[in-house]
Image 1 (tube, rainbow, N blue to C red):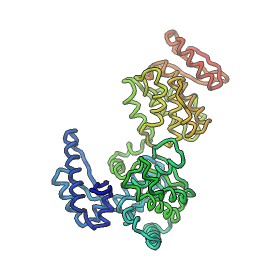
Image 2 (image 1 turned 90 degrees about the vertical axis):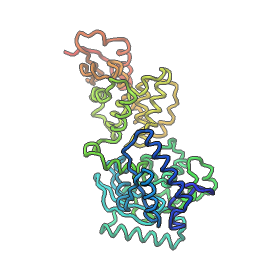
Image 3 (image 1 turned 180 degrees about the horizontal axis):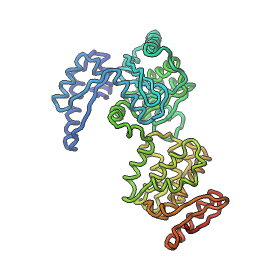
Length: 457
């Protein structure tokens, strides 16, 4: 938690490193913040609260005084032991990257937590006193000692250090470093989830992080993070020498989400995070009877054999979000749908996946004057063309029954040779309207087929 004193913003870890304790002014700020938090929670009628403290409170000589004072104000605080902190950070990563295979590194103000993740399991958890508040004071000898201490710690929990895997970065300062990398790379989004930094870019990254006043002009970097950027980037370089990771992957989720994830049941933890998050939002944004799952299964026969690189889950997500713009003015629905696909708070998806979902939703709501250049910066043209086909299929299905799935269960769509064949219920003439025929023709055109309407026998 950042603490603001009279002169400049400074982390609690830095205060403890400098004084060995939480000074009176900072303690007062902390407790004032807790009073406000407890008051707001009361007004919101929130009773299930879990507050945890990490390295800075563990190391402060008066850390227990803070814990006691917080409890007296109505907020019991759990002091997380270092290995538990490492485990929680790793669980936060698994919440967003269920197939993660590599190391999780959580760089905080007071400590560095490391853990190994594989097959949904967290193990070999470590906590080292190498937080950013301590890294800023290291000279070259100090960095060499720190590197050796990390090697020794890793070897103490495993006979062999695994190399060539991904390294997932957790922590506010590393998020600031990743934002700076996005800025210099010209990356069109500010979303950090699944953002990757290649190991061969670290020298340039360290140089960018040492920019001093130039970085101070970038509003997306919190002031208290500025002096910590260079040591945080140097920590990445140090871990690169030890672990030789395939890629550094930024995680927007960490301890907080990990603690929540640990409380979920096995079935909830096994859900695909992308489908879970888009299903939740789709149900909230769509009309009462909307059913994106039925829409997905209805059109599945058109695409199941052509899936590439996880297309199935991206297409499913687009279907779950298909009703997201129903209450927007018709002239702006496609633009709104595109923005939803790109900017939604989705888990388990990278920038390219967001662009593909957005393109499908854009096509589902028809042509518009919206600028699609952003999408081509994130995803390959071939993938976007596939998403166009999904969007036209969604558009057709939504026209047939409004996305409820009730009529779709009585219809069938399939490719038979050169024909795109839409089978409708026998004797029901109400579904053969001009709009259905028109949208079937559009879908057939993008799929290179001939549109045919027939009755189910």
